[in-house]
Image 1 (cartoon, rainbow, N blue to C red):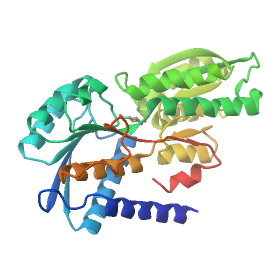
Image 2: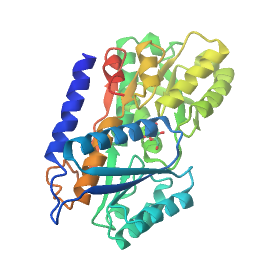
Image 3: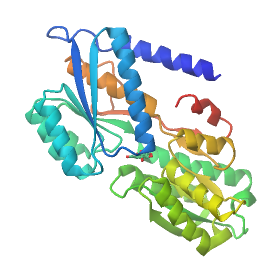
Length: 343
Ligand code: BGC
């Protein structure tokens, strides 16, 4: 099955490249220069996305016989450093810039820079508000719908609860006591996942009680530190750990491993990173929600090279003429192995 998925992914990549990035309107393009600025270097999900960008860039070169120069810079979570990096790409006449923006409220200024330079700018993963994208005809966003991920995460808990209420509601009080691990506060995914995951539970008729919630900035170590305190404070009263991403869910697991507590609550995450999928497969996590970094990278390369070549975007599945979004997928121990191979 894994071989079939891998073969299907390669075929898809070949088909998309054949269907796109053809001859530019005003003469052949020998080298397409794409500058990528990433909010920080040590983010697990973004690293997967960067790997996929490199993969698709190579496939593109092989199939189209055009050189694709993909240059990365890392902003170390510093917006002014990222502004300089974007200035640098534009001054050096890169054809397109891809931005994983540090501070979403700074996106408008970056869009203006790209507009002044008359270059396309594509944001990814950290989403600007629509008004900022509307400042320039050639500003786009590639990512996924945050609300969908939170709803699917909530649905993992709802399904398990409906299946066997006692498995989640361990003290049998008819209320699901949970703790919430949140990503960085300015990120659309943190705010929206936090809200929609819990709303999905309450809309399904499950009563909930938040024992604690804290920002762990998407990071495993920070999550583990918070979780250790909560295990000490609430012990077995914690019936569910809802994490805005897999790294923080894994941090919660680290804390349980450190305290030697073997009877784990229901732990859910989002992303489907290799570590997250493994934890779902071996039953340490109840489930995760697959965030398709591979398809997002494919969309980024496709959109960037079509823009660089001045081609029509008619063949692309754009939403509201600005967005390329990938669906999230609900992962339990039943389908986790299928997705491990995609990473
Ligand atoms: C991912 C997180 C990641 C964050 C970075 C989110 O969409 O789920 O794992 O840390 O993006 O911006």
